[in-house]
Amino acid sequence: SEATLDTTHPIGSRGVMNNPEVTMQQTAPQTGFDAQDKAYRAATIAISLVMRGPAPLKPIADQVIRSASSVSANIAEGRGRSGRDRLYHWRIAYGSAREVDSHLRLLVGTGSIESSRADEAIQLFDDVRAITWRLLHPKP
Image 1 (cartoon, rainbow, N blue to C red):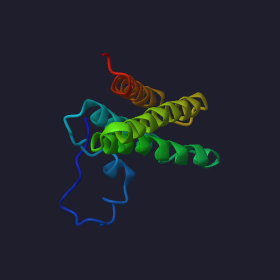
Image 2 (cartoon, one colour):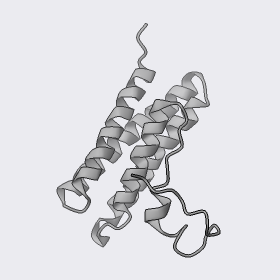
Image 3 (cartoon, rainbow, N blue to C red):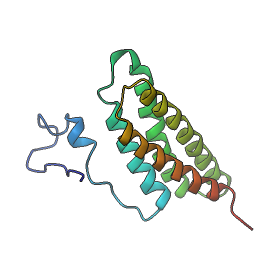
Image 4 (cartoon, helix red, strand yellow):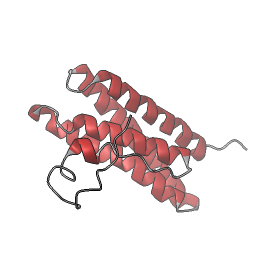
């Protein structure tokens, strides 16, 4: 079960805003747009997994953070656009979801992150790719 942010402490207080366990496991907002909701959940899991990775793999962890957040952000931005601009953002989200999948699998293979949580994020990113593919290639 996911924790919620402890609102008894002011923003930025020690132990709340700077604690990855608290900030990364807040209850996910629901937008009503399945691709965006799944992307947010997947990114939350992926980012929380790599927050304490081994130092030699920090560049890969940093890339997980960038690509995972890109999926969610580009789906959200595409949703607010139209025409080719919308499709552009959704293509970027699709590619970023493939990228973060690759990085997570690599980190699991090295034993650097928890396999079961990574599998959950990978499945969510796969769902996002499937939804995004259908958005990019609607049936006539």
